[in-house]
Image 1 (tube, rainbow, N blue to C red):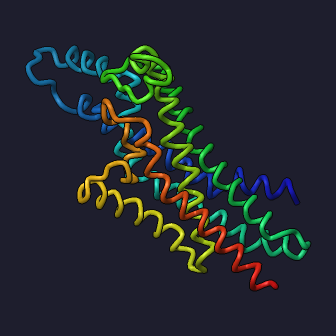
Image 2 (image 1 turned 60 degrees about the vertical axis):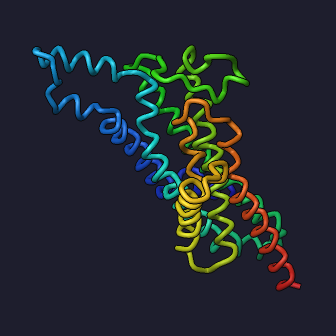
Image 3 (image 1 turned 135 degrees about the horizontal axis):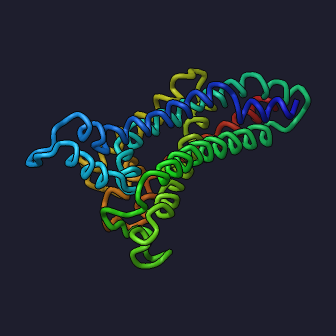
Length: 272
């Protein structure tokens, strides 16, 4: 039984499908947003030899910085949708495994918290590892150079770290954008399912929060540190403080903790 649960959590075909969509999307984003499509289909302006011009432009485009940064817009828009879509795995487990566990008189608090933690951790790790895989493949045909200096991690790893270690910089960057973000929003989405029986709300509520609060805090109130989109886009800015990548995660994390505590107390009160 335990092996079946582990297999379900790690290798369910739905999780694999979402990760495949994410991986393919990274390549599509790079192809178009990295200007590869434009270079291959449009004639270079002001260059007589078209083939030489294209070769020169492709050489300039094949850097690990452009390779990774070309995915920013894609991840800013679709990451919350993909992460929250994973919550269906927790919901399906809740409807099946939880009843089985409770019949065996396992403590509901332990079962629920453990399942929430595992699903959030697996989701965060899965997206992060897919990004690292994508980045590592890119290193095979891109120069490990940084087009724009990015200084968010300099106070931790040293001055000009991004320019000296472009690949490793994006490994650190990906930990925040994919593992930390994936963990928190997975927990956020899963915790919503503890408060409602309508499965679709577990995806809609976190996604609406992400986009709605991004508009309100960035465009309206201009409190950028609370705009959810900044966790995904903080490295688009040259000198953005690192702490601003984490502050947008505090509200979803706080809500998740509150929802879990409230749900557990309500369940214990109902049982007693």
